[in-house]
Length: 242
Image (cartoon, rainbow, N blue to C red; front, side):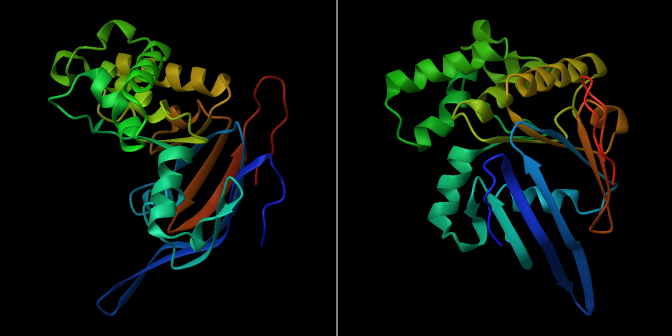
């Protein structure tokens, strides 16, 4: 298998993840294949145990499949060493989590700087890029506030700025509105939609249909299988449903 189409950012083929639990074999992913084009906005849906979190871990280079192939930005992920995987995560992938995962004693600016610090970016450039990322999510005036001085929605915006500061190829958002009130959640979804409109590729994991409907494509999982791949009508274009 090889990726020859520059428009395809992610390609997986017959992906499987099997766990042995005593005498029981759990197929967290069971023969999943799909492509994700650059610039797409994908929602991954499914109940607990459907395989969506396992899929996100594999796509985010946090775990390995039992079998199958995964290509990201033209690179075969299965053939990479740990150091190469860490480099790929830092440069190609941005993560946004339900619990924000911010350092409580650091400022918003310091939290956004972290990926650049790990990448040994010089301080002046690091600060400038972190400030620009905070401006991009509407928090330029909160750069020196600590997480406990910010609302839940603002903390999630900081987390999004941190995910974007290295200009990744793809943003993975795992239940990004799960810990937010309705108004804050809607604000975050508007921001994610705006980021997609600016050209970002986004994969959003959710169990809520109303959240998934912000995406242009909804991939539904059950029992480790991709059971429905729905491209929605959007902006006058005709999408497909499988």
